[in-house]
Image 1 (cartoon, rainbow, N blue to C red):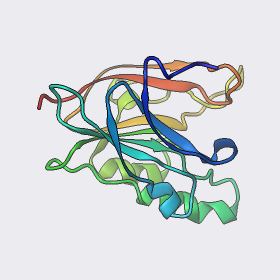
Image 2 (image 1 turned 135 degrees about the vertical axis):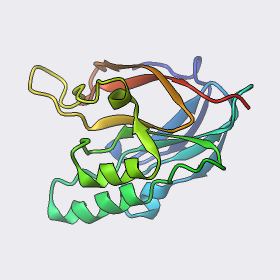
Image 3 (image 1 turned 90 degrees about the vertical axis):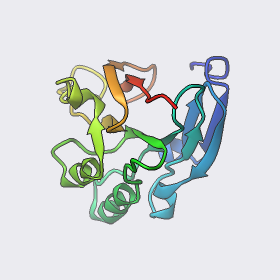
Image 4 (image 1 turned 30 degrees about the vertical axis):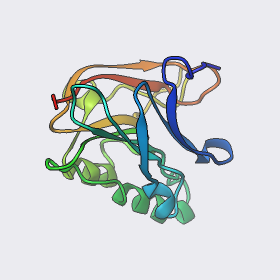
Length: 178
């Protein structure tokens, strides 16, 4: 297990059993904003506002809706994706990151993108970089970093975590100056 306390000492955690919880970690102080996923009847989706010196404030959302594997989860999955905030050029810069349980082919994820976001990997021509499942099987891209138009994308990579079934996605992002 990686100890995030040193490089990322600030966090907003919505604890829950198994994969139902979520956390936003930061190197800079943050202020909890909400949990649109839980409010929509899905898994926890913690949001926090991060103040980074020299940059505009950025709202980070740790996304993880229920997977739409059976009919009982399909509506909460749609509702959780619909509950994600739209990009707002007059508000904080926004980053939505995590396991969306959706590929870029899903209409529900395209609806999120249409609300003012760009998939960081797709912006670099790497939108088909597989993230699930870990291992030699064919991969699909369920995990994404979505950014609003003010945020630049410098790089995207995937990492195979110890013990997880999804590859982690990291993105090098440039925030606009304050």
